[in-house]
Length: 338
Image 1 (cartoon, rainbow, N blue to C red):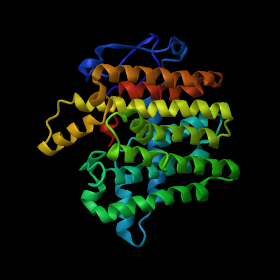
Image 2 (tube, helix red, strand yellow; image 1 turned 180 degrees about the vertical axis):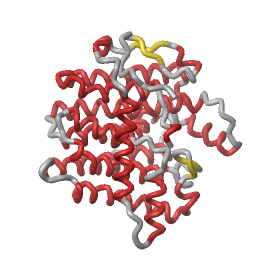
Image 3 (cartoon, rainbow, N blue to C red; image 1 turned 90 degrees about the horizontal axis):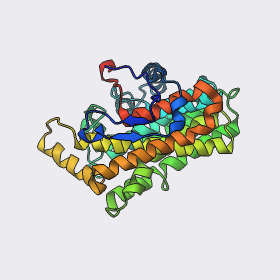
Image 4 (cartoon, rainbow, N blue to C red; image 1 turned 120 degrees about the vertical axis):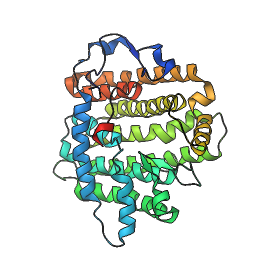
């Protein structure tokens, strides 16, 4: 296990994980990031927040009647393999702009509920047909398709209710909370993640950019923007957070695609078939490794360029800079903590 102690290296050249043979190529990063501190410990920051968020999620979904629905909800939301990237990004964006962490936690938990709900539904046989998620069997393989659908359906409104009922009104005005709720609804709705899933299922093979922007970019964008809204960000700051979150969300998936294609782990026949089907709808499958690397390089630069307007906030911007490099480099893992 390696501590991620470098937010941005002192060199303008940054590399992808050594696990990928193709990633030995160096990827140029904007030289404006070279002045950022190289001593930020993202792993400790992320791990600490992750523990707090896990505890709050556990408290937010107690088992009630009918118990099986709640058990199904908890199974996916509290999965030990969950990194909690959306809620951590939300908290980091809120704190960047001077917001209180306590004000961000309810929305952070709601984002994880919404994220888990989308994963439950995406894994269904009628959708992506994934047998596993976050290191454990998918929800529908344990609880059945009917219960998985109900658990996902229940998590979406629970997230909105949690924001309204748990956000301290003395820290976040109601008008800002309404904007947060509107942002999440936009991200998961028919013009956001749902649109991406539809095109993934029914769209043409050349719709990779749209699919990635909607299925993966929307959650990153929403997470960063919600954090900014909670802290009272101005319009320019919100637009910067939009560009940043969207780029990080897509970057993470593009690198995931490359890692999946180059994985040396033996897979069952059914799993290999699933990987091949996914590859066809990935940047690697559509354009090849070289083009995927160029896409990732552009996304990395785009995310960091969006943060340049926040340098006036000093070290508070370091977590967001660090997320960009983590999305590309995967410099540490939570595997030994779960």
